[in-house]
Amino acid sequence: MYRIKTMNKIAAAGLSMLDQGRFQVGNEVENEDGILVRSAKLHDYQFPDALRAIARAGAGTNNIPIDRCSESGIVVFNTPGANANAVKELVVAAMLVASRDIVGASNWVREQVSTPDVEVADVVEKGKAAFAGPELYRKTLGVIGLGAIGALVANAALELGMDVYGYDPFLSVDAALRLDRHVHVVKNVDELYKAADYVTLHIPYTKDNKDYINAEAIAKMKGQVRILNLARGELVCDDDMIAALESGRVARYVTDFPNNKIASAPNVIPMPHLGASTPESEENCAVMAVRQLEDYLVNGNIKNSVNMPNLSQEWSGIARLCIIHKNIPAMLTKITTVLSNDGINVENLTNKSRKDYAYTIVDVNTRVSDESVRALRGIDGIIRVRVLNH
Image 1 (cartoon, rainbow, N blue to C red):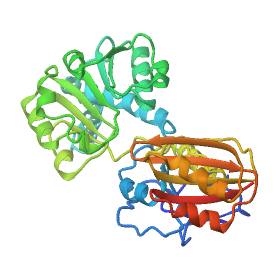
Image 2: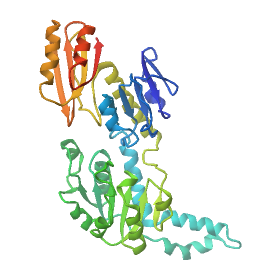
Image 3: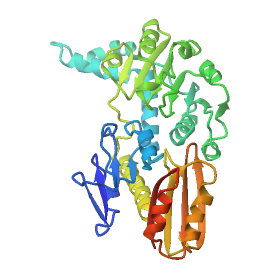
Image 4: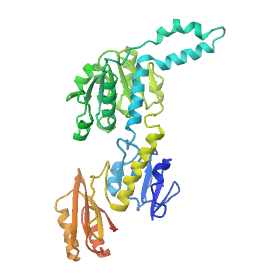
């Protein structure tokens, strides 16, 4: 029986995939083997010794202490692309409200309704000029980050008749194949800044790209640029953005990550983190997170981990060893030596590394003794050893 703790409400479409005879699931579960989480902050959460994996039903993992998980051999999964369509649609809406002042216009109409002796139908023609704005057609959109979401946004903008520039220093082959050939992929983000009437961010937040959009970046952009941030609030320097809005350098700023400072600034359109808030997106994320967590707990396969190498292996033996270890020399030799000394024949072995960490799956043709497991755990650099039986 695997114990799964839910730290947030997880869509039933995902939870229903877990066999009730094999999994105990709920927010009251203790000494859990796995965690399903959305936005709950886990930095101060005391992980039980049994915890083997955390699956985030979403793309960002800022709410999870990745370094602490890695050191403890806890695999962290996310669900890239599961909410991509929902975010893409909201980006299109954000471009429209940043251009046409739809929000301001709607509020103005409501104000007229509440004003004594004013007939709304008589004043709208005169008042609408204050809310006019440019069309998206034939304007230029700059997309920073061309992953699952950024690629969809770029392709959708082309369908709207926009010219599209894209920038991603880590553009993968798969991501490149998803892009329409008419997207101008540039190697220097300054080219994008120079061309774009709209700039939208679709990169993960890390300690290295805090305040990615700052005064220096804004100075390289066109005047009256419209900037959209549906990625992470920390990617934009609030003070520099407010200064640019006050000077008119930036015409509008749409953020899905408001705080007291930026939400009250002029020409800011704040949204309450609506990016993935659709029933379809929540179901997609839950299903993807559950599948990945289940596959790891039951089969040892890793897919879409943010801290460990992705590795999958077809079963080919009686038992399977799943070993998380430091990425250091001679580790495989030490592992196979322990098995050889116990007379265990290796049917299949796969090893992959990711920076300081590595993961090895070993299928063997017999049950693995407790003595062998203790010997493996005693190897310097071994972080976690699990034995699965077919």
